[in-house]
Image 1 (cartoon, rainbow, N blue to C red):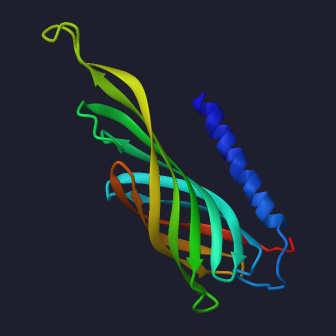
Image 2: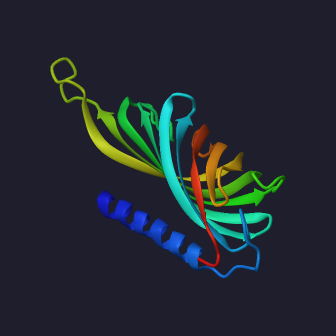
Image 3: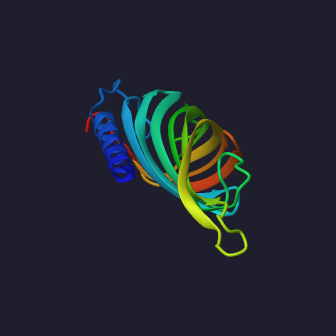
Length: 195
C-alpha cells in the first residue's frame, strides 16, 4: 500500500511539472518569467541531526508569486511528530505540502523569496510494546503511523547560474505536533512558458 502511495505521488509531481511546462505565459521571457514552470530537488538537514531530501514542481504564476507541490523525506531515528511516551525506532517522516512563494526579484541572478503553506506529515515508525513476561521476553516493536497537519514558513534564495537553472538554499520552519527547522540546498530548473 505504501509503495502505491509513493508511486502515485511521484506521478503527481511529474504531471504537475508537465502542466507547468505547458502553461501559457504572459509575454515575459528570461529567469522567473510569468507562466514559467519550475522543478527542483534538494537535500539538507532538519533540526541539525536528521537528514532530509525532497523534490517539487510548480508554477511561477505572477511576477511576485509561485505555487509548488513539495514532497520530502526525513529519517527521524527515534523521534516522532507526536510525543508517544514509548520507545521508538526506524521513524520516518514523509512531508507533503502545497507551498506558496512570495518572490522578491532583486537582480537578474538573485531572487529571494518567502515561504508560506500547509500540508501533512505522515510519520511511520516501530513502537515498543510491553512484553508479556517482562523478566524473560525482550522488548518487541510493532509498526505504526500517525498523520498530522503541518504549517510551513521560511525563506530562501534562487541564485541563477544560467538563465534557466541554478541553486536554491532554503530555511524552512514546519510547525505540527513538533516544530522542525530545516536547512536545505538544491538545484532548480525553470521550464519556459513557451516550451
